[in-house]
Structures are given as structure tokens and as C-alpha cells.
Image (spheres, rainbow, N blue to C red):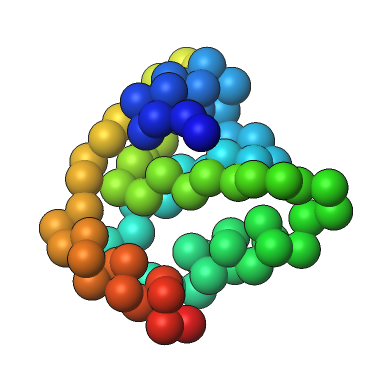
Length: 83
């Protein structure tokens, strides 16, 4: 199992992949739920990671991500678990 730091470093090195995605999400919305569903339906995908509280820096020449955090992670976790 990879640490959050390792996943963030991979995200910056590889950009988003079929098994790792970045979401700014401050709430559980359609985009986050679609990502979760796509991970569930991806043939052969053993594990997938969603880094919540991460945004892509638009002014960067190459894909680069920045951690912005999540205000209420317990709420996000609870909303994901109940949907």
C-alpha cells in the first residue's frame, strides 16, 4: 500500500492515470461519485486512488498538482460511505 506522499509524487510525475485521480472536492458531488464508479467498473483494475483536496496548477507547462486540503475530511468520508 502506498502512502499519500508517494501517491502525490506519482501524480506529479505521471499526471492522472486510470488508477490515480486528483479531486479538489470540498463535498461529495457528481464528479467524485463518477470517479468512484469508474474505478469499480474498470476491468482488471486491482486498486485505485483518489487524492481529495488536490488541484492541478493551471499555469504550469507540465501537469503539476498542489495540495489545498479539505476542510472537513470526516464529513467527506461519511458522505462517500453512505452513497
